[in-house]
Image (cartoon, rainbow over all chains, first blue to last red; front, side, top):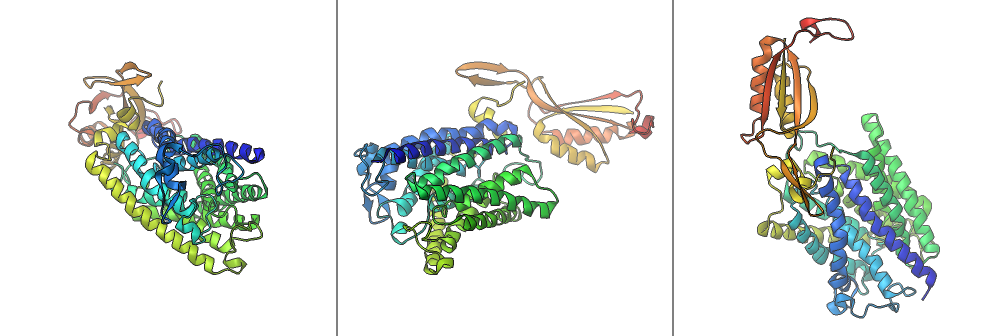
Length: 406
Length: 112
């Protein structure tokens, strides 16, 4: 047991928890004022709902005793046997329960990310049910494959430091399924569905960036050199992501925007997430740069295909996650992390194949299962608010409150 | 010269604006307003305490135009802002005595 490591991971857990609040503000600023509270609520209540799911069965399904490489057993239901003694494989220098609560915050933020795709038009009750089902049947298995002891993606040698597979690609692909299934908002393409409070969005982006140090550096699971290099890689990719995104829009429209800077930073941070603990500072600068360009183009594609992924979860987390997992296969360097692997640029072309397979499998599994879950909830309870509710907004129709009163 | 004041549902603003542009209206003033008429307000709840909110958010459009155009303007607003439900709003037409364009000093119809 190491008190330094324990301190570090407890603080990182709190940092990652704050990311979900940052996300709430990041998203809420981008919706119309009549949906501000409803949008914040979708992230806020997920902290409560999924944390409970996690201690009851989520942690056991993701990290519990391995079954055939695809799922953890329910032996740790209700955290039975998950105590203060360190686990002998996961984070061996900190209490097992500290590792569990750190992972809890990842499980929480992932379904919250998806909410951006169905912003301004999902019923609250069915949203809760969908989030619970999604965490159980999509997040938990994916987390087991990539991080669980015995998970098949991990055994295959997939490099994913802090959440390319289970967090970013999964939420991005789920967002695509949700945007397709729920359909466009009323007025999409004909009315101005403008952000109502970009300063709120910038504050949210700042909190996300701040929390991301806990997300990526904390994934080293000890307070040492690896945490330090992941911290630096994370920050560098955030900066180059913001710069390359505003460069792209400056070229295209003649102006650099604050929403572009915030989006680019988040794109850089999301993209470096799978690579953060395997790459040096210059590699991460390139990763952030490509993230800003790639995710910007991803959002342009949305406009062409006319699906209403309202707050660009696909373009930022989906595209960023895929780019990040692939770039980890190029830039990974055993000199940075001996426990990892070398990428293509460091003499190991095989790694690219492994990364590509992990990406494809994650996309296919997530899309199919998410689609089925959404269909099931839609058939039983109905996902979408009715037109009158959509016109009056989520705040009034779902919560009987308004965000701004004179 | 006459002034048209229309109180409409906020989500209908884009449709009304498009309709007015198509009959040649080149300018208008829009305000977010609150009020009540026959449409009931709504209930809000904060920590269990219920509040009856009587004033409903609406958008007010103001247009000053030549008297000959008024029937078109009123017709477009009536068609575009209508949902058939209570609370669709009202249109008022009043005479306007004078108008001045501040930049040039033009007055009357030339100022519109």
